[in-house]
Length: 372
Image (cartoon, rainbow, N blue to C red; front, side, top):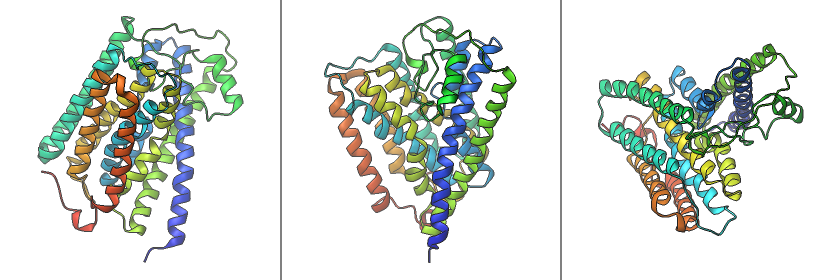
């Protein structure tokens, strides 16, 4: 019988850890940018470190691996990839204010196609790769991520792309923190949209109210907050799953993935309402490339695809692949039907969540099932 008190405690811990996670990620990104600017590191490099990056997701994955909760990690990765497209990108399409046809630039189309190819690769490997092959391909995915970062760095260096400002990650900061960062950081802060946006002007402030040691200290504080909150999230998630009788894969696909992609949903709504299609696309594409290369690469290289408490279902992998294909088609050919496409995506996502509980089973009888 489930312990209601223990479940309530872990739910409260889960919610509190989310706030700490966002605080830590925000501090880490903001003050890393400031330290890099002070030390003369090119702004393009700072953009690569923060653009489309899901460092908090990576932290959750690493903690899950260390705690032998690889099933929770794979569920979170696949669930987050689905949620980014069907749950976040769809909202951006629905909330756009301009009735004119949306315009997606060439860089958005190229990187979206790249995301689709990576998704095809991951789905195929998850289904057919052996234990040893999965470890090898995990290392290859990490290399692909490095090449992706290098390609964006090259484009930024050549002036084809640039790092622009995003207020999305700093909205939760206190006013005093915002004043400090506004006075010292780059006027145009990088965000998840960075690698796909058209070139623009970047201005930096000449005022330095705090020493570099101050920003290094806050950088380390943010990094520590990410690590601690990731540990709490992983522990609380596995405890809730155990007490409620829910599998860790199901909890990761549904609850943990929704919780950790809330910033992406906020960015999508804001960029859609402001008709910033570059931000809208990059928010999803950058995040999914990060998840499906670095995050799943680390997971595969560490576990060889041997998940301790169950594996994602073929239906979930199919939804991830299908949603990536649908998003690519919308960006390449269906901009004139973008609002309808957004509604279709959102309905599919809601149906998917319902099916997770009613049809796609992750009970104890499936714990040893694999897709090999």
